[in-house]
Structures are given as structure tokens and as C-alpha cells.
Image 1 (cartoon, rainbow, N blue to C red):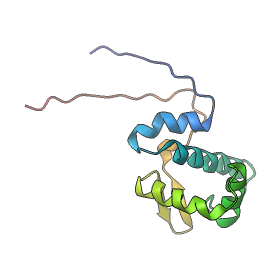
Image 2 (image 1 turned 180 degrees about the vertical axis):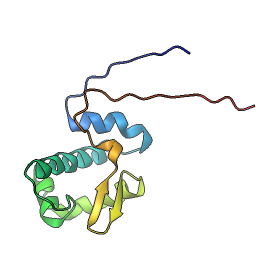
Image 3 (image 1 turned 120 degrees about the horizontal axis):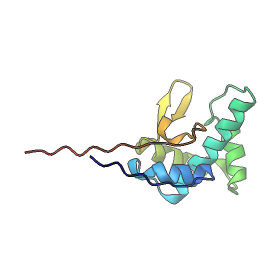
Image 4 (image 1 turned 180 degrees about the horizontal axis):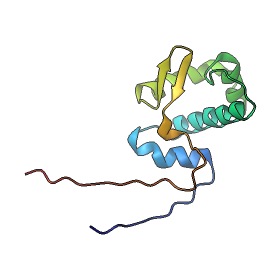
Amino acid sequence: MTEKKTTVKIKTTFQYVQLMNGIFGLTDTEIKVLAAFIDKQKQLKASNIDINVFCTEIKKQVAERLGRDNFNTLNNYIKRMHDKKAIRKIDSGYEIHWLLVPNNEKEVVFKIKWIDQK
């Protein structure tokens, strides 16, 4: 079996989520919203603040960052991201699927193995 490598340079969370999106089928707007929540989550963790990133106060901050007048409009995107399994419901709100959260690894390796079915 031959191994093939392709390098994709990622500079932003949006680009990372966009790359991983083939599994989830998010729209560009949903990716933009989710990337903003991921960036906010990283900021909260760096500051040792332990609150759910989908709480009302953080939704207001994300809405402002995205230029939205009303933070409640984000609830539509949150529902769609939940329906597409990009986020899941937990006791304290929602959590983002681990595949969509960059973890500062130098590289992500995908291995795809085709299985012949006879």
C-alpha cells in the first residue's frame, strides 16, 4: 500500500473547521459562527474561566464579534449545529465536537482504508 501526503496550511479556526466540515455538512455561516465560539472557548480556557461557551453572556460577545444586533439569532445556528452533530447537548449547555476544536497539534493525520466488499 502506498502512502500519500498532502499538506494543507491552516491559519485560522474558520479554515480548520472548514477542512473538517466534510463530516458535518455545515454551511459557511454555521462554520463562521462555530469558529467564533471555538475561539471564545480557547480564550476562556486560557484565562482559566470555566463557563459553558454557549451561555447567554458569551453568546452576546460572539454576536457582537460577528456584527449581529441580536444575540438570540445565534440560537438558530446552535440548533442547526446540534442537528448536524457539530455540537452536543450536555448538562451545562452544549459542547463542541472534539474533531472541530484545534488542539495546537503541528499536524492532523487522516488514514483512510478502503475495504473491498465481495
